[in-house]
Length: 124
Length: 124
Image 1 (tube, one colour):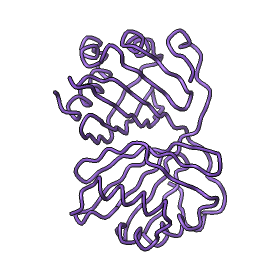
Image 2 (cartoon, rainbow over the protein chains, first blue to last red):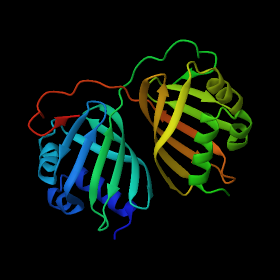
Image 3 (cartoon, rainbow over the protein chains, first blue to last red):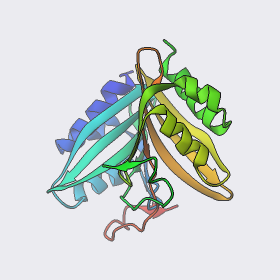
Image 4 (cartoon, rainbow over the protein chains, first blue to last red):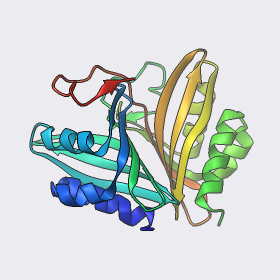
């Protein structure tokens, strides 16, 4: 099989390039995509492709960090729409053939820190 | 050096066990800890130890998924305080000796999904 690092890089590259043919070849037919923040789940390659094709805005993805091991990979990506940036943490699982069978995308939003740790932490 | 997987497992184990001696041995003196949601940064082993020692509540950490490669690891953890659960995505970097030099903790919160993808996504 393709190693997890190569498969993960190809996954993000095909998304950024809107290369739906390449992306289709990287996905298992039964791929499941989940977003824990909103508890949304998209099941199947056709729906997942359509989700990406319909996603609004001129979005761009850049992989900031990628860790791959066995049939798994984790990526910290920078997603940009116009001048807005948002980090995401993406967890990928691959099948025996190296196709993506599961994607879990954390899309964390910013918030204010709780009080009580100002003596230890600086803001950046 | 200790491999990244073993070092990452030891890191979470020492936190969960409140084994501050073990944790101290796993951390580089110049370790930097960041939380992107609040843009907080804690610099140095002493402050980072104190941050964990002072963290309120009877918190417990369980590693749900761990991916390690080279000098890096990524973990999806379940953090529990009483009956409240929160997922976190933790990015670890190790120095040549296998000590933790950087920790980035994403602590994503839940929110409602945007409209327009109900035809593709189910809620779970």
